Image (cartoon, rainbow, N blue to C red; front, side, top):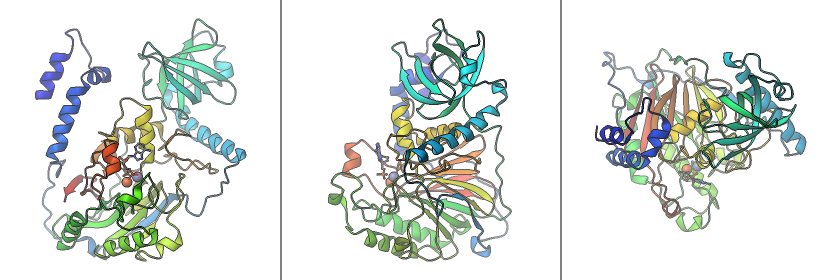
Length: 459
Ligand code: D5M
Ligand code: FE
Ligand code: ZN
């Protein structure tokens, strides 16, 4: 209420509609509120409690059903030749272009070479080459579609015109500018999620826990919090005994040589020993909980995305019942579709789009769903391997989308998709302190696979 009062007293009297720009103008107040909210860290329960179950059904009474739907592991063919890159971006343009084309508003779209000759409204689908802001607060983009390259001015009044990033695929509805070479956009369309996804819950009253960024081997790994978590997992209260799966979206260990002077913050200096220690930690997980591990940028596999699953010389150190998948990957848990992505692409969204910050990484995940791509920009912080298909495209709309990486925690929903950020088990490192990264560690988001209800358990 304090915030609302401050906010509205800051708005000028003539305001009819509150826009994102209005909110950003009072950014300092928003930050203050966010800080207070984070300080309180009381996010145990984000929805009203479910009616109590009469029978005490337990996850261990059900068999696990894990199916891998999409994963680069075993399918990587790229060598990084120019041909590989051509094929990769063609596949991206084709696949995302078709999604944009399917939008009703894009009916009648033409190739750029034909569209730009029109004197009135024109529509085309393109990939963004370059994005820059103008002095007047508008955006200028250069786009192409294989038939032509054009410059488009996206006024800040254009619908959907904010958050443009290089290499994303968009639809443009616009008109010719005074100068023949310039097109003025009225509307930018994204592939987005058509309609609203219905959560395809399973019949069994079981749930999945998300446990990310453990960073074993770092001297900032929180052993005491982990032990507390394991104790709770084994004590069998109503929530913990409903957990059937544990999905781990990367940064299992701290790795070696990941950032400058990392060795000063390592407790375990050998990569194999780090995974051996991880194996010991996972031994405490009850046997009926099935673990799925996908890698992150600290793990021992190629850093370029899509990352294949951890290699054999690592997985043989870990419990044999673990399912190893790539990053990103899509799996079905009891029929519920889960998109697992470590989240490196969030770094690029945050550095490219002023309104996206590390204080709310879920907003970057919404951008990913809107653009149907987890890391569109080539040549930024996320290394991309040009596979023959673009595995970073979100082609199927998941029920649950989980990321880690940003050492934050949160649960949200976008058009019916559960968004999860999976916290960390590493407290702030010197490196993170230097970069002003303030983690929210030792939290476990848990989602019911039956109802889609999410909660966060704090340790
Ligand atoms: O990431 C730990 C934190 O550091 C997380 O908040 C993201 C942030 N991070 C990591 N790499 C970068 C780059 N390159 N730029 C900006 N912020 C970054 P972790 O992957 O665990 O080291
Ligand atoms: Fe991490
Ligand atoms: Zn990471």
